[in-house]
Length: 392
Image (cartoon, rainbow, N blue to C red; front, side, top):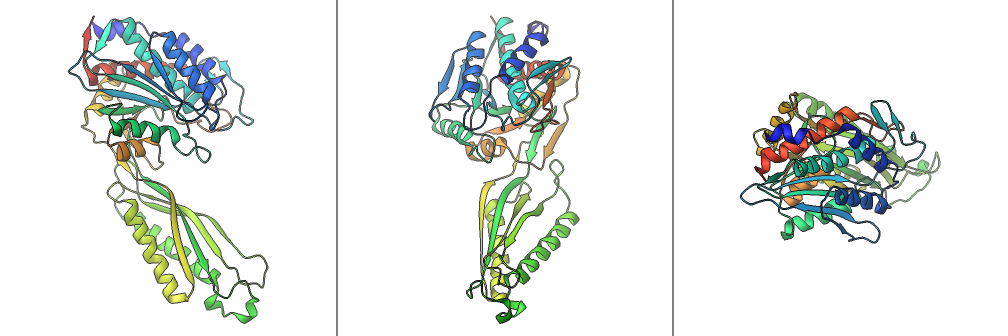
């Protein structure tokens, strides 16, 4: 039987050793070359032809196509080879049932499990009907990363060089993460034509700080409104919050310009353009009432995504997890990731399935070997379920 044959070729100790070796390769965002090279070499060691797509000097994406026999759907597994700065994180090590170090959970462990899943299929003599793509991208981690790797992959999909019917990102909670809110950073600038003059010459009603307070109260009103609306069943409710309020340089000089910066997260069904229109209206109302110049810009915007529960890739992962003795919960998250890009800009249904999402970006990042083994099993069986397979 295909399932038993495939699972028999997955060795948790080999997965653990390769994960530790990958973690030992430093590949911080902006300097991912060694990490991408490690992933390519791991693929080659397991018998696959891996290509380094060096679209940026020293920062290649990794591409590997395992051609199908024909007649099946094409599946692309994906992850990022970069990590946040190593900093003072725990050095790479094996700690009993755990592999420890920067990138363990986010997300070198998932990439190693992906490779071992494909290797188990090859060793078991299983040829998929559809193509299987194994990919690693650079430039994921913000703020240094500008999504260069994902956008390069998106361009190749849109050009038809890569033709996946679905994408599975190999990180996140041990569940089928199938929806995320959209997100954007907003910057509101409030400016007085008077310049930074002595406040004795300016009535409080003409002070940018007074109108910054009005905007903050408006956000509080919106938050109450969002809390009263039905939340999205997977990724929760719309939300707005502020991280920076900055302006002024002296206690009795007019604080101009004054800036409010924050994040706005919105549900599937709303678009960034709708958000932009809402903020433009808010700024217009403030300008009209105050006589000040009020401008708003958005950056880092990503639309929400949602992949239906009955989509074949969701069913394929769910059935694979069940074969490994688990029930895969379908979940959503308020945070955004590369699935927001692949779903909206490449037009490909995307979900996540990873070993865990508990220690990412912490200084004690770690991943459990048993979870990596589970993921490798799920990835292999999901590929069979989704692409179809023939035994050689």
